[in-house]
Structure formats: structure tokens, C-alpha cells
Image 1 (cartoon, rainbow, N blue to C red):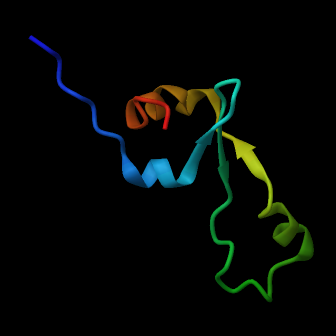
Image 2 (cartoon, rainbow, N blue to C red; image 1 turned 45 degrees about the vertical axis):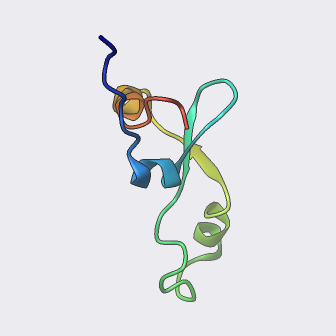
Length: 68
């Protein structure tokens, strides 16, 4: 008998990207809310993508089983 298909976690799929080398990267949160009072260095940081820690890699494999 065939195994069950695993479901992708849609919230994670929208927030996490997988690079060509297999790293998980994400953007910072709180980008648009109350942006005027935030420092320029913080606002510049919002355009960048940051790698997730290696400790989270196992959880991401479970949430994104097919590397979406």
C-alpha cells in the first residue's frame, strides 16, 4: 500500500524560501507597522533575507516536506 501524502504547512510556505544550496531563508517581521518611528538601520534590514538557524532545519523539513 502507498504511504500517505504529507501536507505542506501553508503559513510556513509563504514565509520561508529555500535557496539552491538547500538553506532556509526568511525575511524579518514587523516591516510595515509603525515604520516612521523605526531607525533607518532597522528599515534597511527589512529588505534582506536571513538564514534560519541549523536548529530549526529539522522542523522546516517537517513543515515543508517537498521543499516548496
